[in-house]
Image (cartoon, rainbow, N blue to C red; front, side, top):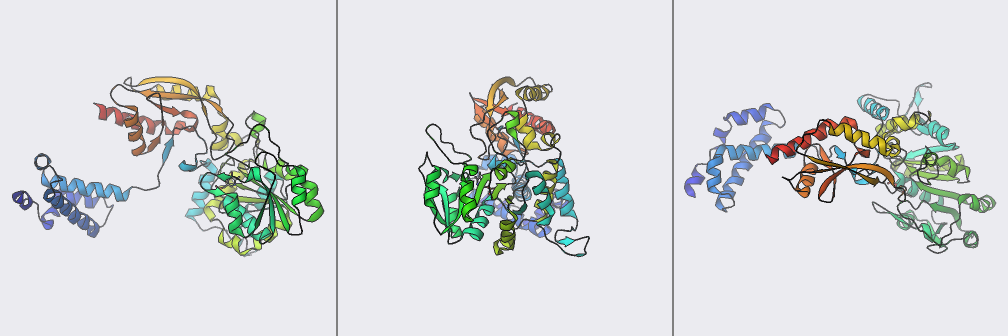
Length: 468
Ligand SMILES: *Cc1c(COP(=O)(O)O)cnc(C)c1O
């Protein structure tokens, strides 16, 4: 063993090696850093030899220097690839919370990039030449697309809910039906947010049934608000009753009680017209009598992460002035992307084509089949392929009952197990997230765009090469 250890080259010699010079020329890391990693690599290998973790015969075949430099290369690629990176979503779930929810539309990406690149009038009134407000940038658009009297934007919908409760109901009572006290994926729990805000939760009704008189009887001097929560990823079926905002309207009117609805997804485009789901649009919720509504920017809306608060000007003005509004404010890139996303809704005919979220939800099974056929045309014959009817989900806690008819591609190969393939696809670049069905790789092309085909082909070719 000692004679092997003696073969470990000195650092100053390794630094003269062409492989070291090549790594340095790639300019991914500084000379100091590269030297440090070189020292670490040598020390790791020494350690490996001493603890007999490294197979000496194998080391002889590979060569000492080569082993050192490949350790250094691994370290470089580990440190120099991004932790947050692109994923090809083969799950068919359009708003996959773990995969970043909505993909942005073309214009939103352009606007966010331009705003990042340049200075902007984020808080500067160009006409008047003085300080402006970032709220104004999108307020008009939200009003136009939802019919709201006023609006503002915060960091996400959870923040929007928190701000509404804290600013308008702190130390007062908020009436919520027991059937709506939900926990939504990603640890958003209505009762916890309420507690955190200092508002007092007053539960009414039962899990399956809440009646008008439950709300009516719960009202006291202390009541600030009646809150309705969209139950999103949870549905009670069967013997149920809930009370709609329009039915609750008289309670709000009489006593200056705020009728607030947390819509969760907040659709502006009405998917009901295409026969998809029962999701109320934001403007319907407001027309039905909600004084305030909150919803996410990156769910059905198809924009960046944001929480939009819309409704009566009187309440929105109070919210804008609250200290928390400053804490929860959104940055310029989000506002740029949100403005561009909302702008697409001004043209109802083109929005379904322009926004990837709507486009993916509205794809028909035939269109998806056609996509798969295009994908398959140049695919190598080593793959056994099969098309199968399946359903995809909208995701993001949105419309859990909706099943979108789809076609999936099943891929298999006698030389490689589905599980191995699944893992390799996930770990490589770009990452591909697939499912396994019947010991085959399943890809739902609802969420794979034609622009991603060449990368997906490339990843499959890599697998083929490994199989040889
Ligand atoms: C998704 C959701 C939230 C949380 O929204 P985020 O944008 O994830 O913060 C809150 N309420 C409801 C009803 C939801 O569906």
